[in-house]
Length: 320
Image (cartoon, rainbow, N blue to C red; front, top):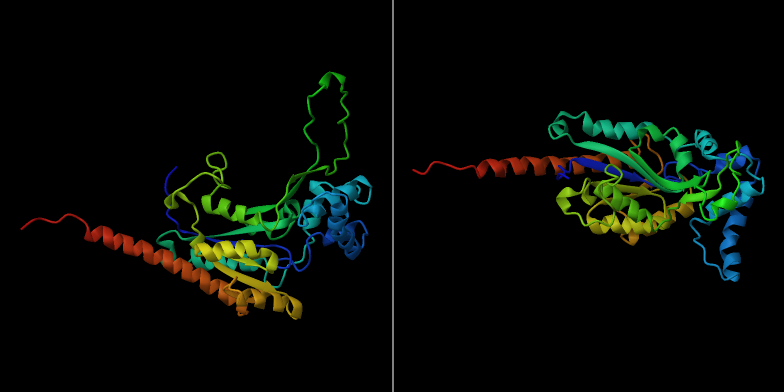
């Protein structure tokens, strides 16, 4: 594997309440006429109920199991990955999206100065939500890659005691039956390391746990900006602050509780800045992100220029 030029800037986004106005599952509840508030209340009570039974569960991802329970009980009949992608089209985004994704990308990639060193911008989404719904949303075409939770519809059967099994898999009504991949707020940091090493691009060549020299990492942490909405994103905020990246928090306009949360993150040194979840031109969030992407691009440009100067100054000269 060759060393990289480190000319890629990555904007890594949380999803719910950062890009999407509501929790992404809202269209599912609407489709099946289920009270959203009651579902989450019931879901959130499961952690303590299972604890009383002596079973430890992950509070970030228990909702995946609860969705499967609802499918099995016929509450979400016919819910499969195709249906999730279809419902993803109904996700509502904050003002300025998804156009802002292209705007900030073009700000760098169409600038003649940055073209000299092929400096580019990539968008990534790292979410504890459902990957299929994000894939079906109107923002997906603007994104390089997505990390999110996945479901399996047709599990691969075990071959144990296969002689005694009849084929019972003839089911045309595919529904989600198992959890394929679960990501919680802590494991989001793993996704950031995978972006750093380029594992999503070179899947068959490297593993996230492989040792890799700085020069062989596809996107340095210092070329990253992480944008999210709250305290649950502290693990990634902390990682990027330690590694030289930038961090930004957003809150919905007019929501005092959310404002106080992100302001506390600033006081605790978790984030560099925060602003309203408004991506329209001239908003604070728009300006901060655009200007900080430019700063990273300038840093890359200046480093390339300096490397060329040093290379030229070290060229051999005639001895007089």
